[in-house]
Length: 530
Figure 1 (cartoon, rainbow, N blue to C red):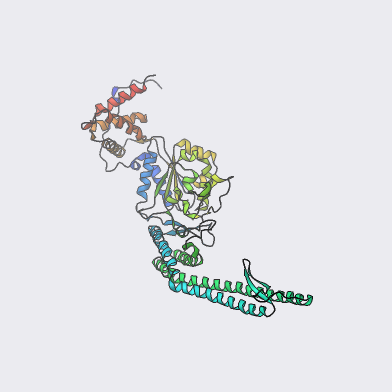
Figure 2 (cartoon, rainbow, N blue to C red; figure 1 turned 30 degrees about the horizontal axis):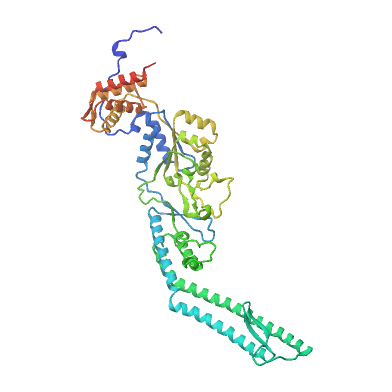
């Protein structure tokens, strides 16, 4: 092709007629239209595997624009439920998850937190009443009197055979009668044999009394236990029934509260002062009956859009914390199970940067497994090979209903696509942002609106139309085509910031075409040493 001489008009910065726009939403730009349509489609599909990868060049505002679009897309949807963990009294190492409407989880947590101190006060008080102590004391005295009477009757009969029942540190035993005035007696061999035979006979009868007393003590203990349960049921029953009535609309919670009522009656020692010689203190009731509010959506007006900046396993799937007890030992339970971003985004959208996911490649397989099975399991991969900790819980899995959006540059999309053959199985939606757009009136109006808002985001700063025109012309120069502008508008944002900084901040900052030109010259000088 023959060379052609260009006129000044053909090489100077293009001049555009710029209108006005009501919004600076970048998804209104034609460069983002394809991505917007893909996002809208991806959010509408509920089938598994239709997760989204947003592809855009660096500095194209891909993350900011995507977050803004997603947050506006969920505003009219209902918020997801709360999630709680409750103690499984039959299997304490496997706490069960429960789903509740938003705000009900917090209400239940507070209600149980108020209920336990009431039980701690009412049960010991009932078991220290005069009526209760009189019943227990009466049962013990009746048994003691009965045993004493039987031993006395045996002693009187033993005296007739020259024997006695004496108390020793080892208990009552049969011995030769040593009553005062009995004096020394001369016994024949036959008499001694008869005395030994009688002693064995009375020892057997004494043993029968002891065995009978043991059985009676067991009967009395069962009676006292029955009395304790009856008293506890009378005291705890109405308190827990009131809570059951409050949450009667939630059958699973009502069932758990009924199980709690039975467990309280079965574990009354938890509500008594610990014994001084106890090897270890009993489990505190406020921990055994606690509500672990894993996800609280009480103040969430719509499905959450959660940005996870560092998608490690613990940050995504949650963790189990530990507390130190005596001797440096570690202890944990279901109340120390903590949520991850998958829990918080459940029912909504989870957003991650592609480079951050790549840095945590070990988590990638766990994430694919969760999306495949549609459940969240909290495990402890970091403790593999370490000494197991007794009592470490195995929380039940929570159903997962989430849309995952990964945002990254084209090179990251290509890397995921080429390295993992399963990638396309899970991320079937590609939302691609073009790096340039046509310089149409609609695009230019939105572009100008963004520029003005960027200027006004600085304290006491405004700009005139000449500055806007100059910046849009620079955007065309960076697009390397006179009838297009770059979609990497964060580059223009940087130039706006530099221009504003050239104007002293102690007076109104008014940005003009000359201010923009000065910022460009300053940048050229900084970067032009080569």
